[in-house]
Image 1 (cartoon, one colour):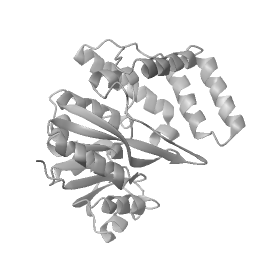
Image 2: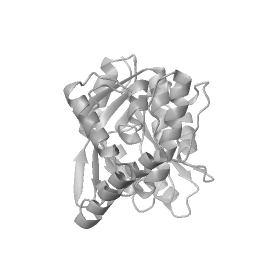
Image 3: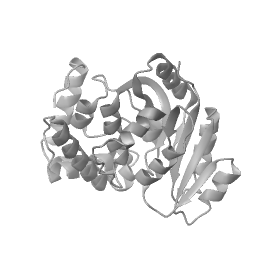
Image 4: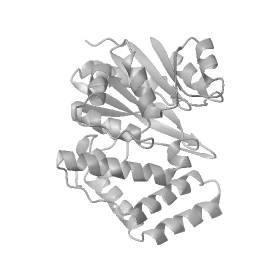
Length: 292
């Protein structure tokens, strides 16, 4: 049976205001090692991490994808979680991920659910009923949660990073690309216990939703081409509408702003809203569908 020892890799850039909570949550799941990659911070991120007993590796600012790769390179345990510096692990969900990892030694990644928190609202994601695979990742064009929701077999994670297929490794949606590469390596299992609390207002998807959508679409088209998977490519207008919808979610505590953004999304791509509604209905009634 695989060892239950876990390493937490935290890429961090100017994260002094919130990294303490992230590190404490890693300690809360009894991680064997916590590795913080200080990605060119100009604040005291590195000092805080060192004072909390973390292994700290400092580098010039190269972006999250490179920072994660550096951290994974020094992991010494069979299991790894990559946690963003403003998110937190949830012990019950991580415990369920560990249980599944022990039961399914052929798995590459275990995906827990996510609690999106921020502002006056919060919501919980659930595992995709159609499963997580290369095909479903390309269909949806998003990752089913932030990096902290995923427990990786370290060997599978390294295989995904070292896949002979060149990686795009953009500064946005890099976690989506890595999960696709993980699904190319082995099975991705999932469960409905919350494994990660995600700060929905501070992440790149909230601050730069159009850039994230555009990067994800580039990744999606690239891996669809190399895998021979048929997908419906998204137009620039649809990507902009999706960005408005993301901003609308973040502004649900401001009714007028929320409604304005929803209207902008509908006007930019009138068919987007009914298409998304239709997709939700198909998944509700035909959960095994993998239609692209």
